[in-house]
Image 1 (cartoon, chains in turn red, cyan):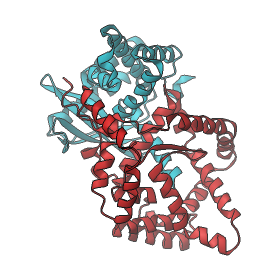
Image 2 (tube, rainbow over the protein chains, first blue to last red; image 1 turned 60 degrees about the horizontal axis):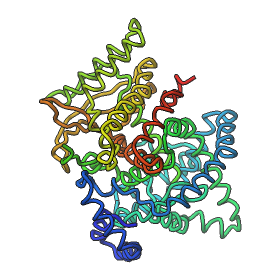
Image 3 (cartoon, rainbow over the protein chains, first blue to last red; image 1 turned 90 degrees about the vertical axis):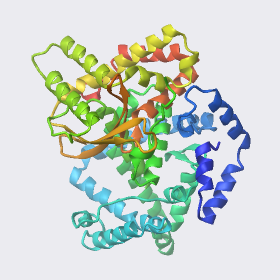
Image 4 (cartoon, helix red, strand yellow; image 1 turned 180 degrees about the vertical axis):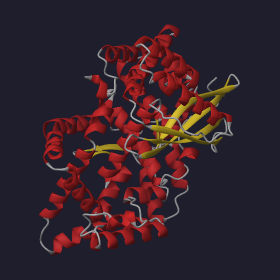
Length: 272
Length: 216
């Protein structure tokens, strides 16, 4: 379901590939748009931003099913593995693994920096990749940050967002978790933007992709043991909470954290 | 990449929760704007009063509730997080919700003051929100006990000649919007506001809003 905000973003789309995808998304549901307008007019908080009001989740039932599936896997497998990894492997080693994986992701960040026309950030990413791959011994150390080139991350979902493409419906992906049509598409594109994909193919070592994926997951889950536990602990509806967090965070990332104060947050002009 | 960003999102959200009232060390506020001065004074009184070991738990809770209601517009926040369901609810249910909501905030944040370990909140500049000038946004930096800093924005509204906090936004994640979204889902699934109150009370009775460190 497309909200008002998505439509407005679509209108602002500059690049034609973005515009094409926008049209594809917009064609999905004109009725939902009309229904949403009615609902807004009926609402005492009508001047809240539409994107806050709308959960953007037309596939909530299948999404919740996949979410439950993911949770089951997490409780049975992923979380226990993360606890083992945390308890058995010293933090120093875990940090090396983390930085190595992050360095491996820099080419994709570089490609997306360039696709967004963020040339300064692209320069930073290129510098980082060279410095850390050589000076940081294949990325196990992050010497670039110390030399004044801090890390940032980009992906094709963000690139689409920066060109005005709306998020599309919320989707919970098996194992990977919260996403949306735009970001899931972005993941596929990132796979093809990644030199790692072609190197492993040429070397006939496709299984390396699986190892990297697994290690990435282990690294992520371990780094978030406390955070995820904490977020789940006092949640009344963990699914709905994560959905909202994912959406707000992606929105902030697309804006590269700039002007957060200008855009985030509700309007309560007519509340009293 | 997605997973790492999500990691950051979750960390941000947690901090958003931890920040809305948390142990704050003395610091120089960026004075000049009354909204900044106001927030800084609340911060100072919270530290002074709530980390004082000579006070009993009851005294601390009473002080916390006073400061909470002085600094935050709990009624307005409560109404906002219930969203469109507020108008459909009976007055009694609205009041019952506001009480449970405040109790949940107390259970969640008061214990943080007894774990004070030198965290700092440095209140920064205030300016009208560019998008909604009705708001004043006060910037701040939260520095945890390990010296890591996170930016947090406080969204204030003018009330009774002073200011009240309406929302805290940490790294792009709004506390009010997150709760609103979650509560909307709960109310929908429970068939009304009373259902949300039942769930809140149930979690309160089990002590599940308490931060993990003090939960045991």
